[in-house]
Image: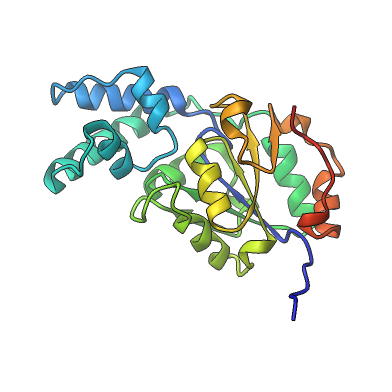
Length: 233
């Protein structure tokens, strides 16, 4: 018997590059930390790893799993430096507040599903004064990193909504892949990557400011497979 599909009931937000532009701060923190260990970290390498958790970043950087003690030391140093340099420097990306408010007014459950450590998420959410909009905040820093679907599935469980009724908002190629692997719809914004790299997403926007005001409401009313809004270029 085919399950009834009632449309989107939860929106799962990535944080870095979606709620807030932290890319340059993460690059500076990685470059500073790795330089202290005599390791060069280029912007090209950073772009390739953006959206991954620290474990995934170091595996990609070295081509193998890092020593656990080295990983622990570098992660603590990098995240501490990141939290230091973002102080007073962050604000929500365009369209974020409007979308959060609209979805909350429609009764849509919202969660953060980020690869960042919990301490980073808490600092940013409170600095941006966004905590009131979220029913759950999930860190994937200790889970298999995106493109694994674990953090999205954990966020869906946290808001008690089935994956097929969830929409993920992402900016990273690995994040989009993780959302689709979780069996969820994905809306990608080109804050970090160009549209051609995000084609696996169901919808692509250059900014959340482009989101039509009735789009979330339409998604609530229609089964996902029947949505006919073409938001891609």
